[in-house]
Amino acid sequence: MRYSNYFIPTVKETPADAEVVSHQLMLRAGMVRKLAAGIYNYLPLGLRSIRKVENIVREEMNRAGAIEILMPSVVPAELWQESERWEQYGKELLRFKDRKDAQFCLGPTHEEVVTDLVRREIKSYRQMPINLYQIQSKFRDEIRPRFGLMRGREFIMKDAYSFDVDEKAADSSYDKMYQAYRRIFERCGLKFRAVEADTGSIGGSSSHEFMVLADSGEDAIVSCSACEYAANVEKAEARPIEAGEHADARALERVATPEKRTIEEVSEFLGVHAAAMIKTLVLLADNEPVVALVRGDHELNEIKLKNFLHCTELEMANDEVVTKVTGAPVGFAGPVGLTVKIVADLAVKGMKNAATGGNEKDLHLKNVNLERDFTVSQFADIRNVVHGDACPRCKDGVMEMWRGIEVGHVFKLGTKYSKALKATFLDADGKDQTIFMGCYGIGIGRTVAACIEQNNDANGIIFPLPIAPFHCIISALNIKEAPVREASELIYQQLVEAGVEVLLDDRDERPGFKFKDADLIGIPLRIVVGSKNLAEGNVELKERKSGEVSLLPIAEAVERVTVAVATALARI
Ligand code: ATP
Ligand code: MG
Image 1 (cartoon, rainbow, N blue to C red):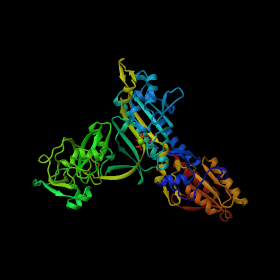
Image 2: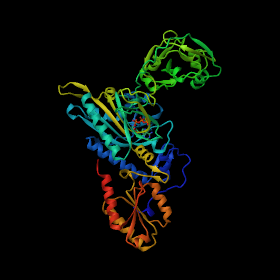
Image 3: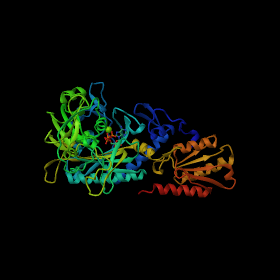
Image 4: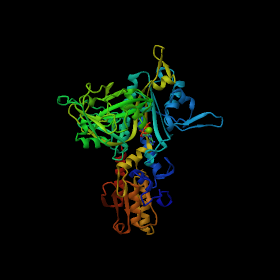
């Protein structure tokens, strides 16, 4: 490809509305352009990287025995009504009507469509296992589209769905996908972790997320310093904290705490450590008030509480409800004397002589003790794990926290969708059985963005070779000089013939300008052809990542690039 008649609209300035580095760099490198909130044009460089990720995904899906299909993105409402997700999915589902007034949605995920296909075509145990996948544009009307391709509204996803005769077979399909995902993200050159995850609205019994480690990641994940345990904080189990030394229960005290509402304010005012306080939160679970108690230095995990309560909606109560439940304005809630359901975190169980709100304006209580002063309806693990917590699985480790970007997600679905859509088959005994399913997603654009998030410096992107838009760029320093032009063309031809993807910078521009663009767009290998070195028969070969420069005869430079590309692309 010749730069002079290609389409790479690079930009010098950092775009003001791009918060994370990958978004900034994708705009500056001319990879994408925004059309509307969360909706992007993919320009040639962006598209080339996206296609590379797609091809790695495709190869690994095929290798794992999955079969590619392509489903429509416009989906009739009836299928979503059958699974009851038409109502449950909320505003992320973009619904519309056709000219005959029939309702449709733009598919945000395709469990319904694929299950409908399978229930019509798969009738016998002999036709399973089968795993169908597609690579397709999805639409989710995200409340806050941001970070460029990381959280778009229209985005490309690979989604795969497995169908099996029973749970054991479904587990084995899941394991195959899990392994395929590891290979995919390794081949993309990413530093990642597979973590246990909550199953969210898609449902199902267990799932793992594949997280690219990056400080800008939206997800908090924890992993054990000693064993394999790793999980999303949404799901991470907390090891129950052993009760401390057996202090005697002291007499309850009422303390005036004028205008002291937050844990920090009260803890400072009373001179009590946050860990010796009980945080009292009023929530609405399907519109019923419920009180959650956690230790003052802990955070409530709403997902754990929601799962524990088996409710569909859980939200923090507004001031009016708080006042109704506690009899006090916000900031003075405590468990003593409450009549609503109270769920307490396991860490609250061992607390003695705690400080907490007094359910009156400007009042807190000291020396509050369980049983004597208040009771709890149920105890459960409802808090976020924090850095340094003991590992819930092994004896030796402590939990470490990381930020991550979720690039892939694998779910065991069980029979959730096959039951709802009556996808059944005849087993070996001729009996009707329900199909076991799994579903497996990868965000293609998000993977490219996450990769840039992990691989960049002050000058721009540093693509790992397997997903770089081009492997090599030839910077011809003064294209008007015949020897430079001829040598650059020769190198270009030889590399193309060797199967290397080359961008020849044949623009009539200053060297510094060309180098800036080359660094910005992140091409892993650069050959610099300039008249001075050429007079000795040499060119410069520079590695974007290490910055290493070698002065080499032309043939050797071509050979080095060819070998480097072949090595990097060799399958793991
Ligand atoms: P998130 O929690 O980030 O919203 P999700 O759990 O909704 O993700 P899934 O339904 O599991 O995502 O979708 C599969 C994959 O699709 C995700 O792992 C992610 O890589 C990608 N993905 C999901 N939503 C978006 C989006 N808005 N923009 C880009 N990629 C996305
Ligand atoms: Mg989502």
